[in-house]
Image (cartoon, rainbow, N blue to C red; front, side):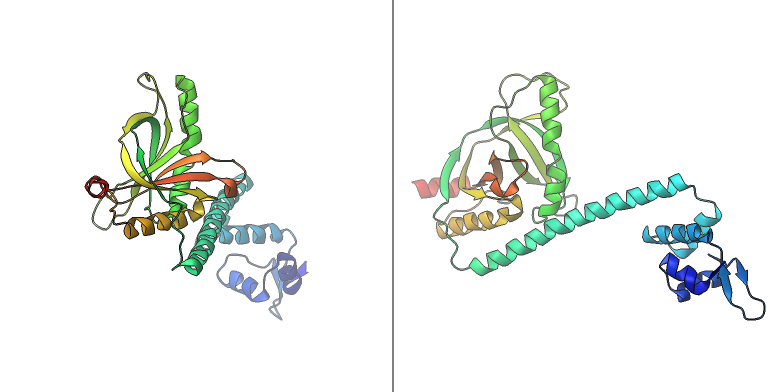
Length: 286
């Protein structure tokens, strides 16, 4: 038998917590001295304590934990629940890491405000292009982590479908965005992952075939991770305002991924193309 202090030490919990578990009937001592009221625990009760703590870490209330303990939750079930929780936490860490990178990028941008170099912005006519694409929905254009989570998985799936259909890509990957609100105040967007193609595509290929219209665009090359793409986007926006142009529609940039080393995001090279209002463009050109 183990004293309450020894049992608490082995279980890495406080004596006070064990007393509370006893009071609510979650984990009773194996023996209570009838004269002193001192609690004693059996070594095999450590497995019960471990399950209680594991279920608490999963976010269950003590009432729910007690119900699961009383129902003799199988070890395999508990293992599966813990693995699921681990995956959820890993995903949260990934999202938080991405947000941290964005915060750092915003801080660097603030430090350069007021003297942003717009010399590298180039005015281009982008011809129409036929693409194969898959689409998804993201929280909004100003939610880069949501865009990444929903856009990135589309490319390998699209490549797989194109290979199965015998449709080769004829150019660099493209991403473009469109508003997709479902009601007032909704800022959701549709994200499109696309590859340029030529030739015919048989029905039932599993992806859409779309012709992107020609655009006149202010463009600039973005070097590095897309977590900092908004820096280049603001550079283009400053150039547009300084030169008297207007963006077309919501002003979402079309992105053409010119060089994308899969294991080194800092070496990515992306051309960002912000469509310009055709009327304003024609007026300026004339």
